[in-house]
Length: 224
Ligand SMILES: *Cc1c(COP(=O)(O)O)cnc(C)c1O
Image (cartoon, rainbow, N blue to C red; front, side, top):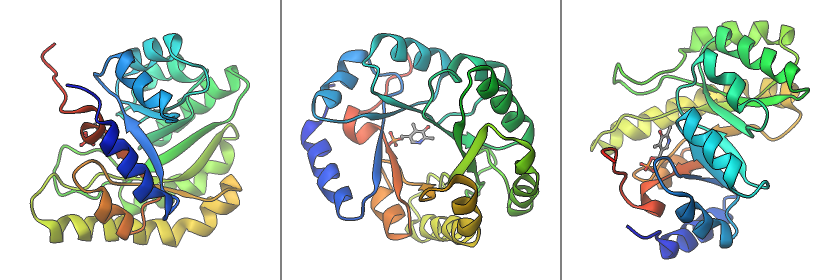
């Protein structure tokens, strides 16, 4: 399926007015597809699989900002630590400590978002509010990590009311902790929420970074 450059232009226009960042989620898609958006000016790309991210980063232009948006295993942090721009789905202190260790090895500070569990589904990863507070109180001992904000995924549901409430919940937790994020990261905090099916609502509910895949690149085919 071809890249939907019309949808891309429209989304960019929509996002400009709210200064929302677009991460183009390119998992399973070939390099040519990413390059099509790159040529149109897109620089933020998101991937879920470490090996795929490493391969793409090696062969695509060096000014791409690579976002890791999947569930990261501690033993794989070392592969992306040299270059990753932002790790979205951090949900344990153990993982933060490993990212910190690899960041020190690479002589850099790695930006991370903490993932909050907002969906009712059991399968979605993330922290609850108590776990978030625990991590925040221990973060000063982790010098090469910068916590820039929060990430979350709403339920995959037709029930718009339910999805909106999950976004509201995440925005409430984000807003409560905003002063800490600003102090800790010295920059405008990031709230990463919203995907192809729900991003307009996510923006209404306070998102300033959306992760959009299928709307730009077409449906994914996992059988290949
Ligand atoms: C795949 C994925 C997306 C993009 O999903 P679309 O529905 O294709 O826009 C966004 N966020 C995460 C964490 C993903 O895994």
